[in-house]
Length: 106
Length: 340
Image (cartoon, rainbow over all chains, first blue to last red):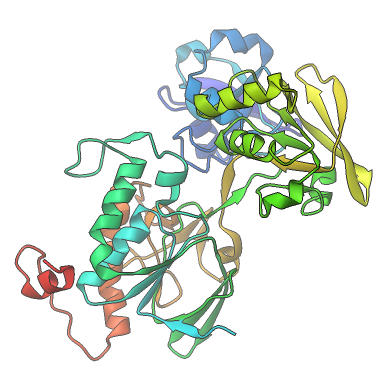
C-alpha cells in the first residue's frame, strides 16, 4: 500500500491508500475520489484521467511515453506537470505523491 | 415524413459487439438495423485505436482495432444489415409491445428489441469548457467542417495537432485568406506527410504556426472578432479572426439514453446476466455499456453477451416459433443463411 494525496480543484483533500501495481487513476476511481472520468478504462485512449502532479514529484515519476503525450493534446488546460493518471503505476517509491485534480475533464 | 423502418432488432452502436450481434441475430433468422454516431463502423476500435494491437480475441493471437472491424464486417456481410451512420438515438417511445426509436437524422424505427451496444456512449467533439467559446459555437466556432466553402476568403484559426487539424489546415489554405494553426507542443500526432505539407505552407506564409500555446477565450460582440491564446507561462495574446475550428478529438457521452428510464450503475446500464436485458423489457445492453457483478469491459465478454441476448430477442420477435439451438458447423439452415 502506498499513500497518495488527491486534491480536488476546490481544495478538498483525499488521503488514499492504494495497492501497489494499480494506477493513480484506479486508486481514485476505486476510492470514489471525484474529478477523474477515465472513460476508456485505462487504455491511454481518451485523456479523461488528466491530473497535475505536484511540482516536486514531476521528475521522480517515470517519463511519459509518446502515446501519453499524444493523448494529452486532447486534455484541457495542459501544463508542464500534466499527466494521464492511468499511465502512472503506484509503487513504494510514490509514497506521499500529491495529485492535483483539474477543474474539469474535457 | 419518413416511414417507420420495421425490424426485428435495432442495434445502437456499430462497434465490435454491435457488429457481432448482427451475426448472432442473423443465424437465428432475425433482421437487424444498426445505427452509430460516427461516420464509420468499428466504434472505439476504429476511432480510438485502429492501429493498436489487441491480443485477447480468442483464436486470433494479434490483430489491430481496424483488422477486427474489417473481419467482423466480412463475417456479417451475408446478413445485409442496414447500417445508419452519422446519427444518434434521440427519442424512445413504447408502442404496445414494441419500441419506437427516432434518430437525430430523423429515421424512425419500430422494433420489439433494442440492443444498446454503445460502448461508453456516442462520440461527440471535445468542447473547451470556456463560456466565451461555447457562446460562439455555430456562430464562428466549429468542431468540424460542414461546408468548406464557408471558409473562402476568411481569416481562420485552427486548434489541434492531429490528423483532422492538419488535414483541414492544408485543405482550407487553398481557399481561406490566411490560417493560424495553434498547437500545445512542438510535436504533431498527424501523419508526417501532412505535417510536411503544413510546414511548406508556413514557408509560403499562407499559414502561421504557433506552438506551445492553448486556447483561452473568444472575443467579439455578436460575431467573433478574435481569439485569445496563452503560452505555457500564461502569457496571453490575441489573434484577429473570422472563424475558429477546434480539433481536440472526440469524447464519449451517454447522451439521451441517460433519460430512457434505464437502471444505471455509474455510467453503465444494469442488466440481468441471463440475457443481458435491462429493467425495460426488450431493451438489452451488451458490451462495455452493460453492468453486472463481475463485469469486465472486454470485447470477448461483449460477444458472449450479444449471443445470449439474441436468444431472448428471438422469443420476443417470433413469439409463435420454437427456437432450436443449432451449431454453425453442422446446421444446414445456418449454412443457407450464411450462403455457404
